[in-house]
Amino acid sequence: MPTTLSAPPRPRTDAARDLAPGLALAAVATLVLLGASRLLAPLTGGAVSPLVLALLAGAVVGSVLGRVAPRSDRAARVVGRVRPGTDWTARTVLRAGVVLLGLQLSIPDVLALGWRGIGVVVVTVTCTFAAILGLGRLLRVPRATALLVATGFSICGAAAVSAMTSVLERDPRGGSRLRDDVAAALALVTVYGTIAIFALPPLAGALGLTDHQTGLWIGASVQEVAQVVAAAGTVSAAALATATVTKLARVVLLAPLVAGTGALLARRSALAAPTMSTDTTPTETDAAAPRGRRAPLVPGFVLGFLAAVLVRSTGLLPDAVLDVAHQLTTILFVAAMFALGTGVDVPRLARTARRPLLLGAAGAVVVSGVGLSAVLLLAP
Image (tube, rainbow, N blue to C red; front, top):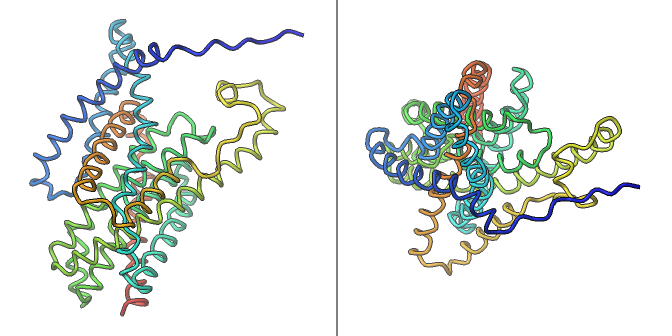
């Protein structure tokens, strides 16, 4: 009976050498993008996340190299050299950023909202997530796109999309379009979150909401933290304080949402695997997974995120450490988003953007409507 010998593991020095070009590209791009983000912040009012800028920049670089590579051997070699490092950044650095995100959340701060405020958050997140998934099926939006849009709109924009991306990468049915799906979701978060900055404060005034109610509504409905700050800051200091804590309460729900989705996808993959194995030959994905070893139901980075939340909640970390962690989280997310962007197929994304745009518009109406209804019912 013939035996198959696997290739010996590559020395660590060789692996590091393979990653170096892509890591260097991501590092340089991160420095440039962080500087550009600071310059643009006064013009945009903080409405555009540096993560979105990073994804756009990565998409431009990837598209240029993708067009030139087939016509130039030198460009093709450049693409081949940077790809391992950018892939590693898009996967590992992204997960590290999600873990550090937990240090921005304090359970006592969230509990200070009271049961009414927490109820507003839970109802808004749950209903928005379920509704956008249902609308995605109705509009025939790709499953991964709908899931990422639902996560970004219901939780915390780009950071939530990033966390859910790490789960979808574990799904063998995710397909090669995942980076395009991420780009679409982040674009929708930016567009409709920016619209909410200008729409929600005057609507709250017209509806006669108190500052506390307005803060709850904005914090429960607007996608990005920066967008929440920009919107609530135009109302009052009290509205801004309530909106910020409400927004952080939504972020706390990121862990159970991502863990539950990961468990569901893992279960579906496990059920589909026996059927696939009887009809198909082993694939590269099959070869990469050791036989008899299953992926954990809860991804390790989600457990790390929860551990970081618990550490922050002890109150033992000094403000200086938390400030450094906050800056490092942004740096890691920017690097990961740039790396993800280099794999985006811009022409295909442009051709298929109509349905996701409709989904985003419907999602914006849903999250704002559900959030307002929850505020009026639970926090009159």
